[in-house]
Every structure is written in C-alpha cells, then in structure tokens.
Image (cartoon, rainbow, N blue to C red; front, side):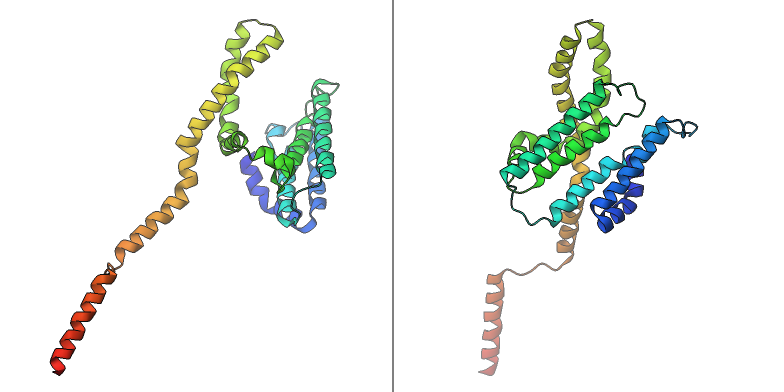
Length: 251
C-alpha cells in the first residue's frame, strides 16, 4: 500500500496544491466510491485483495497532506481556547462515531469506514499538535510523546507481528475477555515498545543519519585533498624573514 501511495503521490500533491480542501474532498469521493463498489460486489473479481489497493485508504493519506498544507501556510501563533476546544470535541465525536461503527451495526460489513473516521480523528489531533502555542502541541512536545513519535515508524512496522506472536499464548490461558485485554496491554505494550526502539536504533537510525554521515565524510575528503594551511604564527615569522632578506639585500 505504501508503494502505491508513493506512486500516486504526484497526483495527490497536484490535487491538494491546486484545489486545497476541494482536492481532498475529491479524494474522499474516490475512496468512499471504491469502498461502496467493493462492498456491493462490483469489484469482486479483481486479482488483489480490495483493502490492499491504495484507493481504499487514500483519504487518510490526503488528510495528512491537508494538515501539512494548512500548518505551512498558517500565520497564527497558537489557537484560541474556544477554537482548540471545538477541534478537540470534533475529534472526540469522530472517535465515538468510529467506535460505534466498529462495535455497532456495521461491525460485520466487509469494508466498514471506521478507519477513515479514525483518520479524521488523527488528522485533527495532528493539526492541534503542530500548531505553535496550542495546548495540545505543548502536551505532545513532552519527552515521552516525542520519543514515541521518533520511533513511530519502527513501531508501525513491528507491532502487529509481535501482537500476533503473543496472542495465542495469552488466549491459551482462557481468561476472561477483560483480563485477556489487560494482560495484552500490560505485557504487549512494553514488549512492542522495546522491540520498536531496538529496531529503530539498529535499522532505521543508520539510514536516517546516512546523508549527514556522507556529507561529513565528503567534507573530510575535501579538506584532506587541500594543501595544509600554514599556522598564522608561522606565516608571520616567514614574512619577517622575507622582509629581513629584502632589507639585507638592499643594504
């Protein structure tokens, strides 16, 4: 899905840059249209799994782009309390709606839109977190959220395999569902965070630092290829000697 996102990225950039929120609205229409077509059976004979096509999740990607454009072009320093509270309440309402769809009447629908609603929630929080001076931004700027954000891509890569590996062992204990959930939280979260941090330091950070390291090495090679500069005091002494020779010759 990520590869498809990147291949379609120029089109998404053009739509958002040219039409702003209307471009995102068009992407939303495409995404929901694709979901409806898949749920109705119109795309049932495609050779790939329908959720694995970027069109099914394109809206979430575009919402992040819209937030980035909004923040980049904004000249506001912080948000008023009322406005920030309105955005936060809207995010909470979307979260409750998504939870309702998750556990409610559409829980068994093949292509339920809860993930698209969650994308709206995360986009609202992202907007608040990236706005300078906002209360949400101050909260997310603390050490622990920043650290989690730093390793978030590694966390995204490793969390599901770890959960799938832990789940059979925990389910085999045949505990109450609430207890099973609590055990998965108490055991799973530390394990996932630990593995994600190790993955980040071993695999991701070297690639993130690679451009800086290459630039430093290039600078070092350039410096070594240049003739060594003479210290200032040596230059002064050599200048005095040359002046003395000239004076002696003249005499």
